[in-house]
Length: 481
Image 1: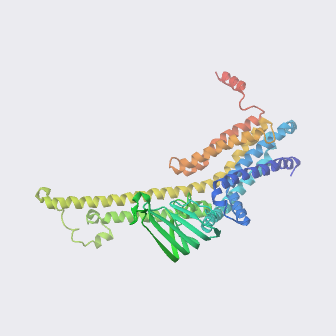
Image 2 (image 1 turned 90 degrees about the vertical axis):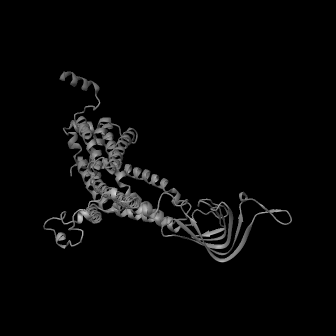
Image 3 (image 1 turned 180 degrees about the vertical axis):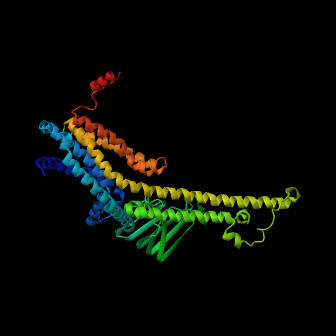
């Protein structure tokens, strides 16, 4: 390796590491802001939080690395141009393509490594951090309770506890407002929280308590024999009781199904490809079985005349109605009662078939959406590596043209370009999910759109020509005329 290669790699390595760490930090802050309610105030161990951030940082690589490559390439070439080192290299007879050759080799290695990382590491990281988030929400059931204060986080209930330890509490007071006609207050010495398997119901096991129930004021007051108004009610005591509360107003945004149905994020390309073949086979069997059930309900499709000549089904067909001639029914000969029954029977059968067809249509939509998501994830892993190369060849010539290093102008330029890329990839993914374009074009399209700009910028920077030189473009247009 010659001195130029060592010098170029050293100049590129520092900004790349710095920009990658900054990008990762920004994305982690965005993640923490999104899940702040699940993490704060729950007494989580530092080890659990660090483990969560470790796995999340691995899953954020597809966003952090392209931005780091783009920003580092602009800063590296900008520093060389600002210090006139790039001019000195060109004056010695080296072209921009020769100067960028070592960095191109490094970026290609990074792109290949990124593919293997996205294919083997990121699926595991996605599964791990999703599981940790789920475990945090499952085990810390009393996180919404603040000792000594009432909380209304669960719809229809006001709950106050004196002390809490994990899922166990003491000094419990519950005001139940779920029934507008009855005001119910439950007190207990101690209790323990449990959650249903689906996560939609919270159970509270109470020990040594009382239940006070009284009618609300809207039901009117009654008068006692001495003339004073009172509300009807009752008081009961219990040794052990289990109270049930609906968690629909508490567990927001996520449930177990919603978090783990996206298994395409937890598979590599080989597993996705194998699963796609299995899903296609399973879906075809379901569709074929549905078609057979529909045909089985219609006598026409079971008749001998409809079956193929050499069909085994035709040889086995021995039903009495198969060989009979068609029966012509004159509706005018039917009585009103028979006609009404016939219409009712026909309408019932039509509605039943319509219900089955609508169910099959919903299944077909779900099938295509599921297959489409797996195909999108399949192409995403390959397109990411190509995107890194394209963004490098956009950032490097831009840095050579701008000739500004540091974290000033390069940061502004890189952020604007990355926003364009992010918009393109988001639009492409949305169009692929909406069946507007194929998964291939949805994932590869942004890179194909940016590639011509990369080529144009490389040619302009290699020829020391500004890409937006208005006078040069005017001269070219005048020559053509």
